Length: 317
Image 1 (cartoon, helix red, strand yellow):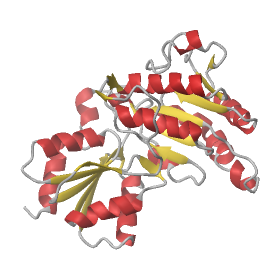
Image 2 (cartoon, one colour; image 1 turned 90 degrees about the vertical axis):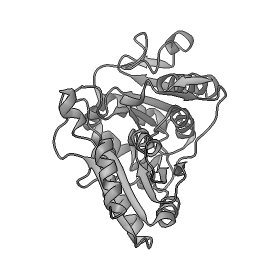
Image 3 (cartoon, one colour; image 1 turned 135 degrees about the vertical axis):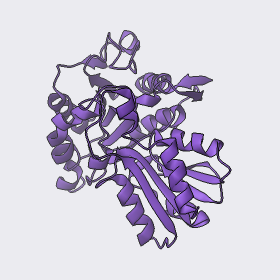
């Protein structure tokens, strides 16, 4: 059945609550309002004691989630905009991500944090950032970024069953995109990349919503383009990425997140350390705050024209 990204997340949340009694949802407006973008719509009616509206304090929400996880619960926390993760950095980075290590493996923190991420909606500089670069740097955190509805549901289910803290960045510009999604409960493995499209001339490693942009380029190009989606940014599935890179010998890494000090640079480094000796380029977000004006915002992330030009450079044209 065809479902939008949001519908797939909503269905996944409903099925998780129905099958895992220790799971619950908390966050700002997740109850009657149905979440900032509608991901929790209707859930409070069926699970009134397990879909909890909270005060406007990301630090407090994440602290409560971490504490309850230590006591055996599996909280699913919604952060309306990933920008607001900055308010909860101490709880995420210094507490949730470290407790397993600091307890010598005796304690686990099975929390899932969902965060609407990225540009494309005209939400301006404080509601459009891509912070996956930051959190992929933190030991103890699993960081995923599903690029479609199928993966969004499957990654969510896998994350809730994992005993480590998992941070899921959901590109909000993809929320209305749709594709066939199974109605039953299923998992998409964490830490495993996916080949989205096969090709033999150039390999594009695309993250988040850049997967859809790369697909559009490939569908309208005479160049045979292989597209790989890491899906999970920490841990990276380096063997799959390296194999796809070696296949064509020419690689373009695409991210919406700012290129400077970013995950695109990490992927590039990992490929080189894995023995890749071909041609490689990366395109990412511009090093500036995200604009509200639609034309300026669009110019701050890789465009199809820029991707086509980068491919031409890799091919020596």
